Image 1 (cartoon, one colour):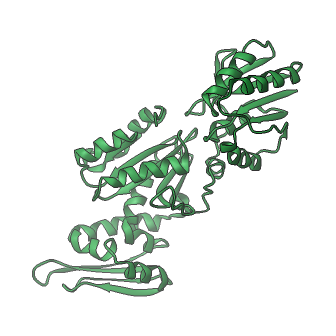
Image 2 (cartoon, one colour; image 1 turned 135 degrees about the vertical axis):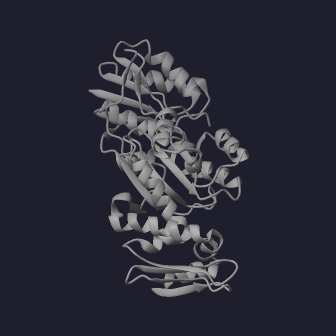
Image 3 (cartoon, helix red, strand yellow; image 1 turned 60 degrees about the horizontal axis):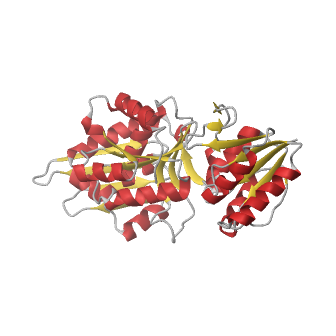
Length: 373
């Protein structure tokens, strides 16, 4: 019988992927009272016989060693793997001492790139399926409210081009009508099927959710010159307002990346007020072996947004996930430095003549670097 002993700490992902990699007949979870909730989350995703154990003391070497020796004796006739990827260092050390001496046992480790290492054979394995939706559930954050990139149409793609053209006519008033909205206006946009916003200089924007149409009229700051356009597409409301057009433009670039297996947009998680200042992510990409979180900003107004973004990555995606902070305008040096300090990839579209190719190269280079915190 194949018995898998998993040391469980605050990170459930390496535990789950270790189970997927070993395909055991029986599981033994080693956990403390602080990681009991992680074990409960794992049990919901795994339908394998379990040898249930009591909580283990986090630091007492006598109790830890006694548990390891008990399990070694109990399963001395079986094929054992001991996953030390999660859990406490005190457990890893003492379980390692006991099981490394046994010919029927192997110490195994799952790294942040979901490469499975067998320390007896000194070989690795990485050919198993990665499911980011299971990962979100394991962290207690199911991704239930999002839009698939495939749900956008050719009409939406053409709409983005029209939006960019009218935006270029008067950036300031476009932003005032579509981005810099008051709480009252945001509520109006969410709840009314058709309405309009007006500016004192004559500029206005109208929307009709039934007809999926937005009309934009922008005046210059001085004089009577203006430009007007009507845009129709299935997702035109989401594209015009709150810089949705830029998020879709970034998603199009990411769709060209061969590691992008799934792209989710406008992702909203259940709010966790004790952990994060927001519960939404612009774009989430399943990159085959890990998750890439993407924050899209036309330009950075506050560098503290980068700290908040990093917090969101850790809370919702765990230590193994990566972050990309991408801007339309030039990124200030202080923002780039802040990204690097937080282990986030900074990228600005205006820095390159062919940003799609450069972004792919950077992502391939940075994706498998380990997060240090």
